[in-house]
Image 1 (cartoon, each protein chain N blue to C red):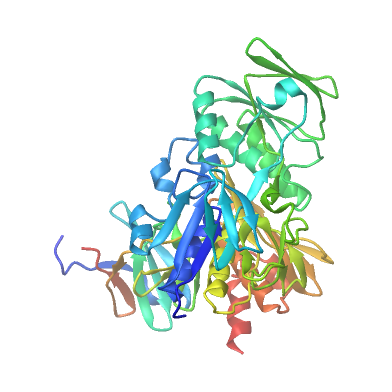
Image 2: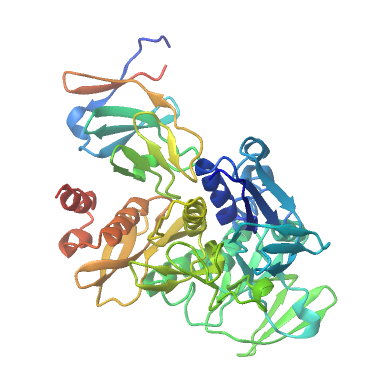
Length: 105
Length: 415
């Protein structure tokens, strides 16, 4: 996989503002967010315990884990509220012709 | 804050360590010392009844912060049992008679298991789960036995049952009241949880009292009041907890179902604070004192105590929230499920989750939900936010699982 490989996630209107969708690719799970500032992507599993963040709450640019309420900043992946202490990995996103692409290389 | 102060923290659990960490964020000078009876750095307790018991997590994975964190942050950790406190002289005294003086004291001694009183021969043989040593003891014992009796059908008993059942142990649960997990859990949710345990082979004796327990050879014979007889190789008790306040019994500290504190974690004695399970604190939203035993409360209350100790006056008004994981089910509770005039149900299967909202005057007072792992988390979190904001809620949206609850907070917060 090279650095310029972009993978299609779906249509831009498939995610509501202040919401997210789960995206699975090559045995990995990602979360794709749409917030006021645009589209962003992080790992899809909480860094605290193995739970899918797709069921979490997106609010004010943050994602809250549905199990233990650890909070991460969506843009930076930074863990900002315990029990989360390990940051989430983030991934570049681009939007072209109403389609969202993620670069996971 | 130019002069160097001594801040001492009694207890080495979650409230203690988050308070210490918070104090250090605002106060780089003071000497911060945690005094704990346990010979471990502060660790997470929820996995003790779940992943730790199922050998999915090791003890070193339970630590809140690494040893390096304590070194970097200059937070001292003293493994010593404190047996006396003198609030007038501002000292705490260890069982080997060392006196430690303090300028400010945080009491975060947590809670202690209530113990069963069956008979003298049996009482000392009943196992309980509170700390890592208890969990190791249970783990060690269960590796050699198959028949386990659990007395108490509350969260801890059921979580242990779930973990041991998944290791193919034969389990009997005896619960004195007429419902699992206490009265605040909606009976439909309690019944789904009960059915899940039964599906996994556990036998439950609800609304059942124990007449007597005798030990014969290495086995216990538990005689129930309805004359049923249960055999067990080990007995685990889970019948609730009491605030750990024995240390303060002969002091002026005001205690009433825990140490009474105001909304700033301040006790009745100057420069003495309390946080976590041990404190019966004033909640400004509910306008009364409440005592909570949960992960989220221990952490957030500890953080707020830390701020207040560091001189940043901050009110604690966090909305109560807790969870329990059993098999692949996740139960969550938020707010207070009492004083309601209406109950609204959302969802009707565990795959997408079932939530009961306890309403008062068209506002949510509390919510309790059950679903497959993580499925109810978002809606319960939204309920917490709606409770916190104390706003009217359209019940037509609450009942309709096709409508996302996000709209409730988006609409209201926009104004």
